[in-house]
Image (cartoon, rainbow, N blue to C red; front, side, top):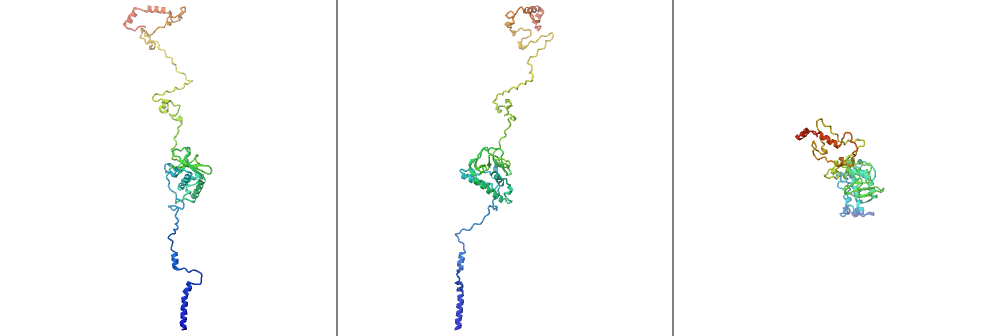
Length: 363
């Protein structure tokens, strides 16, 4: 009997061990295995944490370099729409931020922008690594540019017509034009830096415009047509006032039209002896011949006989009241009376017959 009671006591003692393990005297809570499995399941209503993504599709932790569209020597071939559409100061500031966001992907444009805004020279090779990812130097540079823009006064404006445009050459190098003057659509944003420097960015092209060309930037073509070459007036036939109108013609502005233009006579040389205007004396008549009458004195035929010579009253001594009869005729001359007598005596029948036969004879 005692053995049975002892065995029952042992069984009760063994049966009591699991209960002590579960409901032991310690204060620690007992966790059921089923409850732990339920609590470990995720809550379907909770949002999963996003996985970290790279900064760009190329795998750059910063940003990558891209090929730019520089059609027509522009910084951006298609322009910047936000600048063209800006109406308020807020629009202008947002457009400036977009400009910087575009520029930072182009090494040469970032170099030129740094020169304009920070007045600092940087090398393009230092801004991107071999994988075309922006370097730490580029990050610091862009952060400085953001600070300058944040401290600047930005508004909507037009680029000055006498400003210096910028551009990009065929090699992608950004530079400045050495010739002032901008035409066409000059819609822009105006950025006044804290030091008072004014910079415009045009919407049609994204080009930077200033009133004076910055130093240490190469000369490049822009989207502005080159200025027409002005010729020296002395080298242009149409502009040189010393060229006669006949040489220039109507296109030279002489106003002659279809009529020939008059040419001014050259100035006389005071040291030059003018040519003589006296008519040469006719040669003496040959022996046995007769003197050919001058056609300019009446054009008469040999032997007279025409009425081309008309005597004036003053030629006749009788009719001329100023004739002095007391004066003797000068040597080699004779009076009219003696001349008539001599002429009558000189007439002979032979001479009359000769004249009638048609021989010229003597006059």
